[in-house]
Image (cartoon, rainbow, N blue to C red; front, side, top):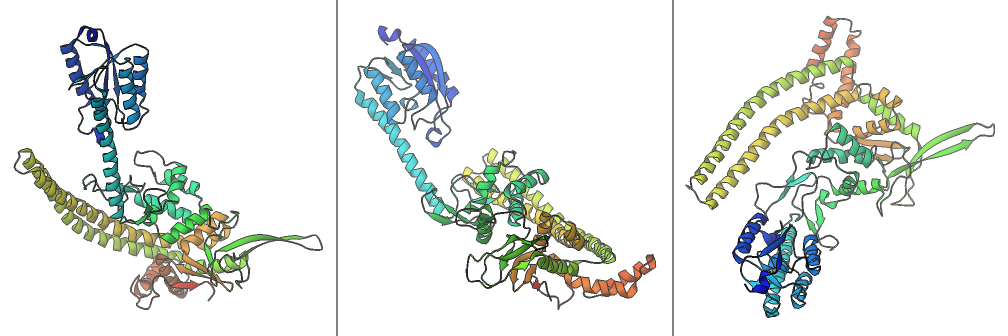
Length: 547
């Protein structure tokens, strides 16, 4: 170190980013400690320490730029850094350093390996900067190649969309996208609300946030803009574009949350380009029914009739949009005629209160049997689960004592954790299945109770919700509405006639003895015991609302 360099004031610059380029670089604290030792050995005067946690692959680092400005203001004329690639990995920042040396604003750059002076041959520094920049270019190329290969294998190479997560059992670079157990079905339920046509996306999200405590992975409420983007993301029906705007589409191997038909219906509801959208929200059944002749959606409109005597009458008509076939011959139908048919089906679904009481008693007894069976099965699974946990702990102890290699540990640990996850799923599914079956029957009974009165006195939104809950595949043709009734409600239709007939034969039911007789008749009926009637219409049977 010559006398001129003894008078130089240095800025200690330490940098480490979290990206792949710097994974092998010493931590910032380690850099600072080593550089301080170098300064002490070489009697260097440090006027400031500047720290940055940002990649140097692009220009625009605020701390680096501030350091250059301070050097230009003569606050310092030397730089102390761990290696030359800490200063730059891009040609623009590299040029600033080279120019500073040539203009003698930078008099000395000291690294852990060597020093750089204005009088030195600049070719060597340019080569080193070029190598640092080439490393970034190669890393970028390799990363893009790896991500593209992953996309081609059917795995979305970007952070998992909400409702999904990266498989924690897989190693980095090999992670698959799986369902997020906390959010997958909540997101699906929220989308279902939108699909009914009763809730707009904002209302559906508010309900999910308030009633179901839906949150993102950070525990925060999902923003409306995020939910709207979700509804238009093809990833949710199993297809994705990578990179974005590239025109390269892939079929994902992840489990789709919705079907492509549901996706198209959502776009129609949202009014996306090329999709039809009802222009008003005052008609409860728009977005639910399709024309039985051409397959287009059914829309509605209000008409006003003014009589010569001054009376004014308002009518609501439903009709085919004609978007698929402008020559569709289906006629309009008054809303009153439609509602008559719906009320007729709801009446066929209604069950006597005495039958509902009996039904819940049967459900409770069956549930107790299921609970006993479930308890036995879960005890078996739980023992296997606990044993697997103990084996993982033992494996960790073996690795800690170096009884097995890192490769063997990783392989066996992956096998055990996969089995552990499988057993946890079996335990959860066993409980969920029995609860789900019970919930379905209870839902059907609760839906049927006073369904007619609830529909007649309900708001437009409540009417739409009731109709949507009846089933799917609503087809209107020649003035007759056909519905594919949901599975739990099919039993109601079959049971209603039988239960009402039995009750009528024993009426009036005045006391406990009459109730016991009635329940006994219900017990003896093959129609009323779910699943016992081989002649029952199959699930998915489409019921015409006018028979």
